[in-house]
Length: 433
Image (cartoon, rainbow, N blue to C red; front, side, top):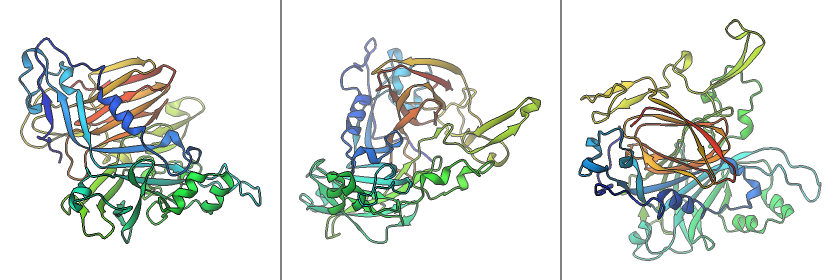
């Protein structure tokens, strides 16, 4: 069960005043942090539209309520559903770690000797990065700055790495970084040499780029549509590190080179989860075709995106647990555990976001919401306002494309940025908070 993090700060806003969102905006701050990410190889090896970032954070500042409610700083008592200011994030503090996953492929590059296309196999990768310098938790445990490399304890979907992984220092980022690739079936050194990719070769040689198919499993071809009519996609390659709908769970602890000093959350280890709910034509529960749909004509092609029907009656994706301090769909609070098996809708809105327009980072205390992108491309941000027992609180960032939507659960943080030169058209619906 989730719990409110009482160490977060709610800032009192004097009646008649409003925060200055144009300076030190937390959405801009988060995107600036994301821009510091550096891939081990050149970008043309990655499917950049499908990169998925996790930025763990340890503290949030929220704006307080407006007007007569300005003294109500406890979120449990912030029951004015028309006061949106009280949901807005004003600042955050990231932790020492960030994580990145995505797809990599050598398929466009040729072997110099044969000059033939390499096998087309696109596989997942996972990058883990840890802050260097004297201000990290590991540096505090050591009592000094870590050396040229640190060590990593890692589990990926409960699969243990088997031994501590050496993570080298990256001078370009001033961080310790490791990028683990699945097995693409080719000699990466030969690929990088053929491509003239000096950065990738250097990453390979210093141990920043490592092939680990025991940990980073699956291939993009696992999810090809052919032969998968009426197949529950949850059963397909469930350990794939880039499964389109199943979460990827990561357990991490960091140590110095001697493994004598640790940043391990006091021995509990850090538990991260790539879990942003994105659905669309390529990320769905089940797909198929239906002739003469509902007595009509021709053949319909369908995707089950979210469902409480038939085989998905136990999915719980459209429902939520209702905490005693949350309003339910009828606007009531009650003691004890409650649940709703449905997504309640109080509004349906269309929005146009112009270039450099962003919906700021904010929370919904009570209700669920869907951001459905009809046109364009956006950066979607979600995260945990609550503290869940099974994972650290993180911001998740990934690209949302036309025809895709993100389901935002109660207690979740979310925001969106249009960083393109074109307008984006957004359909939003859900329950007001």
